Image (tube, rainbow, N blue to C red):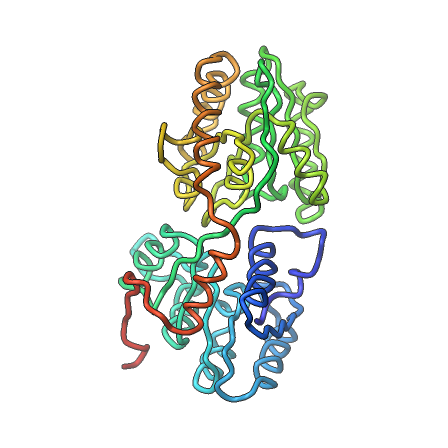
Length: 360
């Protein structure tokens, strides 16, 4: 398993890093012999030294070795990965497709490189059905075969919820993609109501952005009700989930949204932007979706949804009931590992699509 060195950094508990770590552990639990190789570098924007490190790592592996390589490494390193794919059984674990289409519908440079990689390797693992559809939209059809292995979740204690429902929780690194500026704007729009918001996540990845968020909160006179808690350890975070009333995730992009199922595993309802695979994570079984989805970037809609949650006890009761139903349907990490293992053994899942290799 070839992954970014940041996977081992406890100060960066991103969804991708957690996924890599848990899959590594669970594959070992299934009886696989797993060798983990950490590759330093600023991925997915590698410099020459990082590319050389990846090339050296792959060169050390024996011919026909079964290799699961993180997409943060692979997608932007076609000059390294494509030649190695002729010697190794490479499967790419693609957390988030890096490519995009320009205004004329043509692939950007990142997409051209990523497609070369995905067309050369033996298989691809993605973390949501949305991601598989995204690949099809980018590349016309999916280099493959492609298998979906959605993130698992560990069981958690039940969040009982307070009567007023005013304890709001956001768990995401403080970077622009996660939409904290939208959250603060929406919170300012409900400043007349009673609430407090705990923002858990790394504060050192984009210090200028964090400083701007603090200024925004202060300018809106909500700074005393918004707590930027930084990264929490597993036990502290678990207790914070249980003590919350509502998870708020205002992201501009998510492949799946692992924090959504982390909340639902505790029966905690969710208010989130309808991006990527968040709808999949939220689910629509039983009594209906266990939360509220609003359009990405719509600060007013986010504020309206917060107001509805805070002012309507019947809505809170309904969403709490749906979240507790969803809690019973969630899958663990062993299920995820079985899906990854099937991809490594090139077992079809009935939905895989193929395109000819580039140049064929």
